[in-house]
Amino acid sequence: MERIKQAIEKAKKNNASSLETFGEKKTNRNMGSTKLEDIAYVQTKTVDLNTKYLEDNRIVVFNQNDVKSTIFDILRTKILAKMKQNDWKTIAVTSPTQGCGKTVISVNLAISMARYDDVSVLLADFDLKKPEISKNLGLKVDYSIMDYFDEKVKLEDMLVNPGVPRLVVLPNNKAYGASSSLMSSNKMNAFVDEVKNRYASRIIIFDLPPILATDDALAFIPNVDCVLMVVGNGMCSKSEIEESMRLLDANKFLGTVLNKSDDEWKGYV
Image 1 (cartoon, one colour):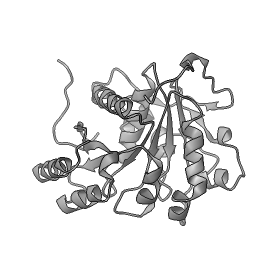
Image 2 (image 1 turned 60 degrees about the vertical axis):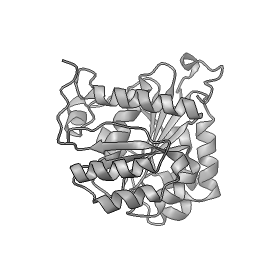
Image 3 (image 1 turned 90 degrees about the vertical axis):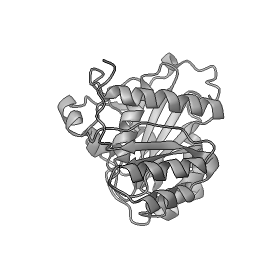
């Protein structure tokens, strides 16, 4: 645990824009004139999520009575302040290696952000090697990302509202082997530009593969404004943390989340 914290601290000293973040027990750009109450997802499918299923998959923010949801609310507020300060709208969530819990962080953060009155959120599963957002939410997904890029389906037919106002999810139901070429393509760049400009208030969270597991994340990151690194306690070495952060553009480095911490959050008591 201590060596993980030391590695993060060392990396943070090399990134002036670093944002201190919080651990989890395993478990403006100008907002413009568009009002959020005017945004209606008339073509977006709405589903009711199973609360017990979410709890079993560590999606704690859905239940606002869960004391651990406060961790993500604090994280949300700090991230939104940093994004507003830098005029950022798009954020990539990644990790050094697999097993760090980046998707759990992405989902909880998206739900927490969507509860802010001033923003709407799009959560996109862009881990094309191992998509897991639909699994974490218990969503039945009919299409893959490639169905959209192959023009077999419209974007609005893929989007899902998981019963949380101001939140839509772009899930994926299939791994894609040749994903790195897509991630760095002009087609992908055009897609990101289109979705981030659809609503002036929109924040987009892209759940990406681990930095050191594939080149997908590095190929895609030029498309986003900032990067949040999730480090799982005991899941990666000091050298893996340092190497993954070295590969990131320091100007885009938002901060680090220490996940699966041994320290239990007891809330404000």
